Amino acid sequence: MSEMNFVARFFVNRSAARRSERRAAWIRQNARVPAGASCLEIGCGVGALAARLVDTLHPAKYVATDLDPRQLEEATRSLSQRYRGPPPPTLELRRADMLRLPFPDASFDVVLAFVALHHASPVHHDFSQVPRALGEADRVLRPGGLFLYSELFHQEAIRKWLTDHGYSISGVQRGWRLESVVATKSATPG
Ligand SMILES: C[S@@+](CC[C@H](N)C(=O)[O-])C[C@H]1O[C@@H](n2cnc3c(N)ncnc32)[C@H](O)[C@@H]1O
Image 1 (cartoon, rainbow, N blue to C red):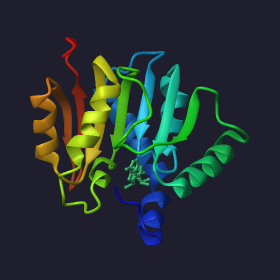
Image 2 (image 1 turned 120 degrees about the vertical axis):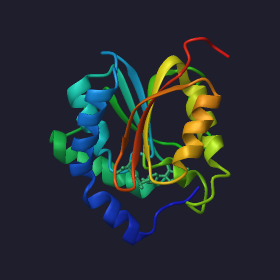
Image 3 (image 1 turned 180 degrees about the horizontal axis):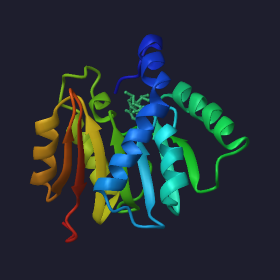
């Protein structure tokens, strides 16, 4: 795992609101998130996407997680400004490591990870820990559930891991460096 330094955090967090608007629009266009879904976000940063999706998709539960307590503090501050008080009860911020998620098997309909998976390894170019993070996301996602992510690194290797584990890939969008993907887990367990 790798936590960001002060400078990286500053640059990642300052444009989070703008990015979350684009991501939420991409999700609405490419993924069918069922009303009343239970959602888990991995590496949520300041929680901008979480708030936008909670406000527009109305999931039954949205658990936004990050490993770094400073990011969660920032998320708490930013959400209390957005909602002028505590966030809606459906939105929970929680500290969690993507390498050992503290949730039961098959407990979410949707798992999201935006520019987060490469943080599984201490060095972003190192793929070695990413399968462990993908394995954890897969474990907590129910059969037939959606895994929505975007990545700067390991794009082909991640897609290969997912198809090898029975996911179907759709909605691939490639930007200058970023690839966004909708991956649907096989409805047949195992
Ligand atoms: C590049 S930021 C992306 C944040 C947010 N998703 C966004 O796009 O604005 C990556 C996030 O992953 C978090 N992170 C790093 N290692 C993690 C781990 N092992 N488990 C969960 N989150 C982690 C970082 O603290 C950071 O908030």
